[in-house]
Length: 345
Ligand code: 13P
Ligand code: SF4
Image (cartoon, rainbow, N blue to C red; front, side, top):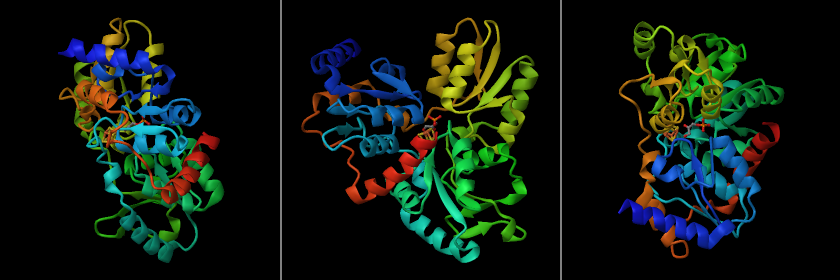
């Protein structure tokens, strides 16, 4: 039963104390997040992993790329476990190393040695390693602006992987015109851009988040008509048009802070993952909060981590096959990319 499963988590946590660390991303289910030792967005969880030298077992309640990051930033005696190996990320899967090497070769042919690669942390360790090896850095949605600014101190133009929307929204906020952004299509191996390539400042990898792409301009229009007093706040993984028409946009932590600071009685429509929106609704009964998309969008892979998987991973800490171990050669360069971010952000 649910009660037995919950009791088992508490028992293992009490027994292991600080030997066990359970980080939980804000998009995780309540049944899991209630047992997290720390909750956070991807930046905070990366920072916490880097700081934690004590825990022998890190049972990561999040998705695969986050567990890889935790493994890269912890020491070799610390074991990072993902409760369900199927908890991937469709965005991270949109850029693989072969595609990236191919893209790099063609782009070097067009632009020469003027490009710095940046990768959203929502990418595989192999992509972070490629980026690190080429002088670039990782970014998260909470430090993307800082990191894009930093990138332009290094090179004339950037290749931003794998989320075109975060890349476009961030560059736009820094004053780069949409006309100066091109899109790299990894399926056709073509640069989607009309005009003189020497003007291109930002090359956006054609990837996206399947959860945040579900928020549409239509949702914004409908919300404005039905609830004229609502403030619309969205994650920068949403399309440019959606961010443009919303009132505020920012990372998961930015959205949480905005709601926490908001006046009682204020009204909010939120464009981000469903578990987080539902939690904000529950935690703020004094505010009127809805999802920007009434059909609500869960991240299916985040949701693969549930209470039974958490219990099972706690019961099999020693013999588990769910250890996330990034190969040392990949980890070394990926760490360069992550550290450039952690130092600058
Ligand atoms: P942040 O935690 O950086 O807001 O990223 C959102 C996300 O999509 C995580 O998978
Ligand atoms: Fe990936 Fe989007 Fe899910 Fe985050 S919310 S894990 S980016 S699919």
